[in-house]
Amino acid sequence: MDRHTPLHALPEEIQKMSPEEKVCEYCGISYLILHEFKAMEEKMKAMEKEMKFYQGSVDREKRLQEKLQSLSQDFEQYKIDSESKTERIQDVSMQLKSQQNEFQRVQKEVNHLLHELKIKQRQSQAF
Image 1 (cartoon, rainbow, N blue to C red):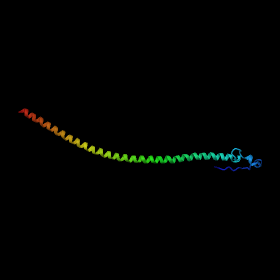
Image 2: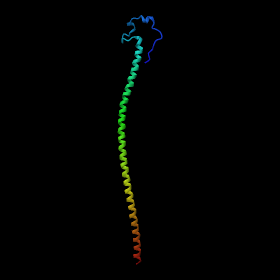
Image 3: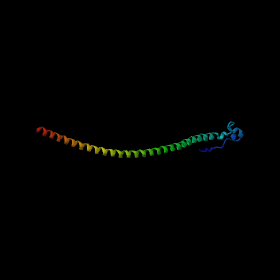
Image 4: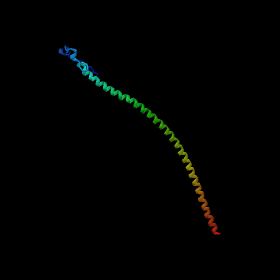
């Protein structure tokens, strides 16, 4: 807080006053410093409020760090699971392709046998 230095000395009648006349009967503070005292009280209240905010921010920061760590662990686990499932999908895709190839081979064989059967039936009807 800036300290106010008066340009002029106190008037002589104030300087001649007894201390009892210059002091607040309720709080005991000199009227001459009461204004500065009130300003310091207000500044102190503002600083206490700011301290509470920062104290809360430390707690919030700690909770956020814990949450971040938890999310990072979850992410790593999901990444591992994803890689495992990707490998499984690739394996199943290869099995499917193999089965499709086998199905096509069997289908060609069946078509060939049906064609031969028709030829045999025509030959037997011709006799």
